Length: 304
Ligand code: AMP
Image (tube, rainbow, N blue to C red; front, side):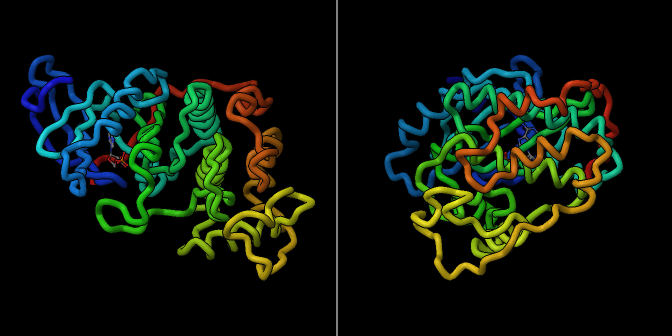
């Protein structure tokens, strides 16, 4: 573990669920990094050793599409994570440069993400809170996952560091129904929502509360019952009084997407029963990705 003295902060580049992120330079090597500060104010004993251990494990998680964690530094009752620096997050790209999302880029991004998730799942690490804000991009067409494994170490708070309500739009139905047994399938649901958002250019299910989120999902996918999802009625937050919606047609931009294999993959991801949802590994092998062409340049919007 190195000291914070080796880094000079340049500017704040973001605020996430757990804390502030700074652009910084390693003054020994000259290398630019992203420095994430996680304040652990409730901890009277300093930074818990379990958090240090858990986070340090992530240093071994190396994959071209997972943001590299270079180091972990403890200073002023905070835990600092030193990450590889990328240009911006996918949310900003979706907000500011909708025109860059060509079918070729969407396919390339999705393949990279599925491949990275498959690798993390193979290493028994779940994300649990995937959303466009924690997918980072650069101008060479790369997309990388950030914040892997943090939800297990620090839990997903109800409100972010900035007091913003944590977004529910990408949350899997089994989490909304109160499961305590998280499985890898929770990440697949989030990816399906992100996939759809790149095509629709707006969120697929933009709920403003947990129940609104669940109802938005059920209105499109149908209210689950024991036939389509065995065990669903035993879930902690399943209500017998849920309205019984029939599955609706998916948005027409998705149904009519020009790539004919897309709809099949999408239907295998957006399955209410997590036990029948496609795995990330199988998704990478789907025929949708057979004719993938690498994208090597993306015109990113300027800051601001
Ligand atoms: P996070 O806490 O990871 O959600 O980070 C909050 C925001 O900071 C992200 O949405 C990004 O805009 C930015 N950010 C986080 N990590 C990095 C990084 N490694 N490179 C560039 N920007 C980052």
